[in-house]
Amino acid sequence: MIANQVGRRYAEAIYEIAVSSDKVKEIYEALNQMMELYKNDNEFKTFITHPLIELDEKKRVLKEMFKNSDETIENIIFYILDKKRMENIRNITAEYLKIYYEKNQIVDVETTFAVEPSEAQKTKLIANLEKKTGKKVKLAVKVDKSILGGGIIRIGDTVIDGSIRKELENIKKR
Image (tube, rainbow, N blue to C red; front, side):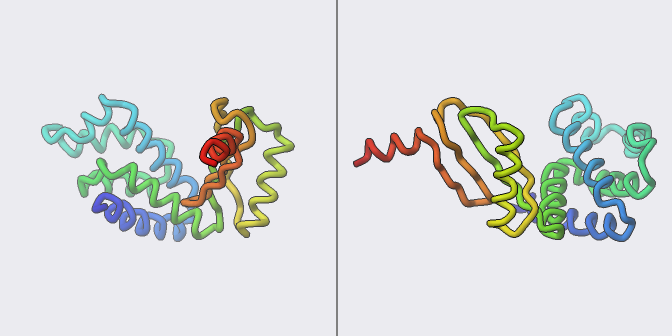
């Protein structure tokens, strides 16, 4: 809970900077890159959080990593590092994306199908969901043969389960 609050506060401040500097997408990409490194590279995670490694050395390495980035991005990354909030990078990035989606009327939709839908089916599904939600849809598709057929659509906390597996479970209950 506290980590989410920290993430939200930092994300809101970073988003304001991103909007004022017209670098919303670039800053998201940099935050996402940091999050992926922190999550997947134990050597990087140890280096960036180790208390005996000087802050200047950490900044030198990060400056080299982001050498092709804008100074605004570098300053944001350094600020997170200075405030010892690198362990919150996942929450900060997730909250930043939520704010971006809210401001740009985008909704994240996760779908699960027994087989991969065609591009035409995905396009039609996106069009229908955009009509229903009134927002732009960012579609994520998973394939899970265990649902047997049909599909499952998850929009935020709402789940629409139209899978054959679910139908069979409902028949068993009767």
